[in-house]
Length: 214
Length: 377
Picture 1 (tube, rainbow over the protein chains, first blue to last red):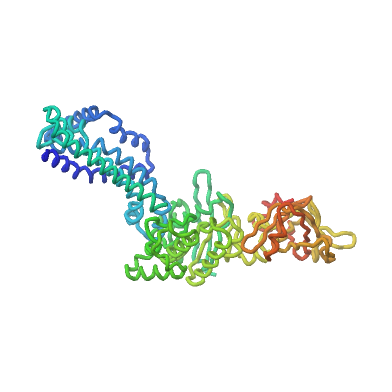
Picture 2: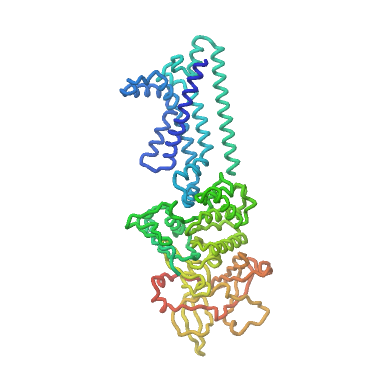
């Protein structure tokens, strides 16, 4: 189980910053930039959450298999594929949260900061980000929990190779298959604990946000 | 007075055409107009928060916008403070941090002392660690004002910041703003649709309607009744009637309009004219007491439709059988008890209080005479 836990943690260590950057960035674009096809883009980025993981995994497998670079670099059925497999279905959660977070920041506050002599990047760091922070963290907690628990997409693109791509959910599957229920329960308990901790964090962040801005 | 702000904005926003020119010295200018007339957009254009395709804005000799030369300074380099209607205080920062935000470029330690100094100037030094949500409406206004001025803007613009406050608080803040203006000398452009703000705050008023600047006046002139009548009418203040000046057989002049007549004195000649009576020049009468002979022809009776007590001034809207009058009296403590909605009141117009503008004279005035078609009857 330790090896599966370490792989899961490594996947998370890479996915969390990617979720923050990609999810936050796309969410900001959708919330703050008016461009052609914005609504279509908004629908498309939500697709991974609607599609069954096996379908998403299948398309991803074929898409990556078509690209020479990924094929030759041995991307599929390796650790990078496990990272991508966990990232993709959890990204829409972060995008949705960050879109709501940035849309919820009063534009006049940013404009006031500009008229007070602050440059746009300073306004983003000193006004926008602190005000959107709680909702962003809620999105990050939920999407990270989803990434940690991914099973279907990871299985399709990374396989279930112990010590290489076997994450905790895949480990549970493997243990159940070999009727080793005690180990499956231990791993499951760990994931339940992480899930509850995420929910508590989300609850705390949300209630804190309401208190401060009341 | 030399203009510190010289701005010409010509912008098409959908169907709305904004076309304003403003010149303002080291004084308080009031931008006055009805809702949707383009007041707030004008401020946003000046502050650089909205792109202007055609225009020229210069402040203290610096060109902030010149569409022909392709110059457009971004808002953070304009040094134009803007106080929003909802104040835009940062909810995640304390009062001190909010003010500090406006002056941090001077170095942290110095900025802190400047911020504290500004909080002291607006009498909030004891509340520096409170968040905006923990401050009252008036305190929030003061923090916003301190934040805007701590940034040492070359001009301060206010977008109806006191509109949500009640009378006494608004009066206090207006006084404070006047004081701060005297101390700092920063030119101020103040947007409002409230007549009291114009009279209490401004040096100069710009009238804006449907995106166009329709006129400007020194406020001292308006208060003395020398403003153009239609500007008063636009402000919704005063009693304005269109009619004729005539001389009766005995040679006494009087003003006749559709709903009545008023005795005049010292009139140059007959002819179509506009009569304007300031609401505070109307005199209440006691029906039990004899009436001054000068007033006897100009007496009216009517029913009180509305009573407003605002800033120590009692405002009455009175409906007479043949018209509608605005009357203002300084509140004495007993007036508000005396006048109630539906009460019968008697009042008189002193002939000397009737300002006449002959339509013949107005023809020479730029573009405004023709707009006077609808008068109160």
